[in-house]
Length: 195
Image (cartoon, rainbow, N blue to C red; front, side, top):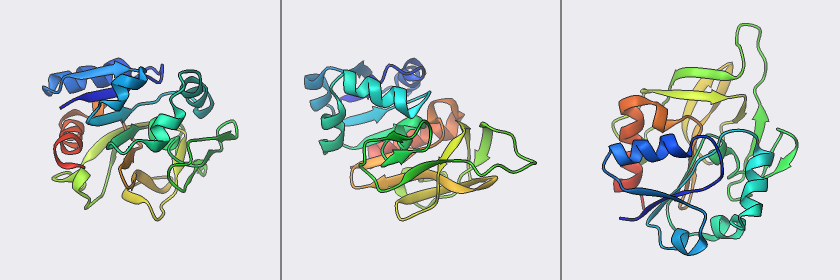
């Protein structure tokens, strides 16, 4: 199976590759269109701002490919957020693959931001097989509210989408590559059981 991590020029590329390699999946990081088109499974990682991620994808001429791929694709953290229509972070139009907006957390006095640390995630979706109620590692200041495409939820200051899905596009707000055994199980579920 050919597993490709889309090169978004973001900071979590190497840690995701190390995680996949450790699990025995020979992953490759690439922005080459021909290589991406030959993938069986795609990962879209992201750290930083939606504006920077979109600028990088535009520079690498990957936006049309990502929007039109029929291969199972998993967006991670910012990679999930840019699957939506719009991000309030720097008022950025995003990929418009899934109908949601990314919004700033509703500030509450007893909560600090960014939301950073381990939180419980609830889901009955196949992506979360054997993982309902497990803890995953989050680092984010913006979130996606619960909606039609939510397949997992979490709560920090407010309930939000820990994971979304539409057709062959999946997204997780947390970092599975930094979430220990639970994250490894989720990645294996995506590679072995999805699509």
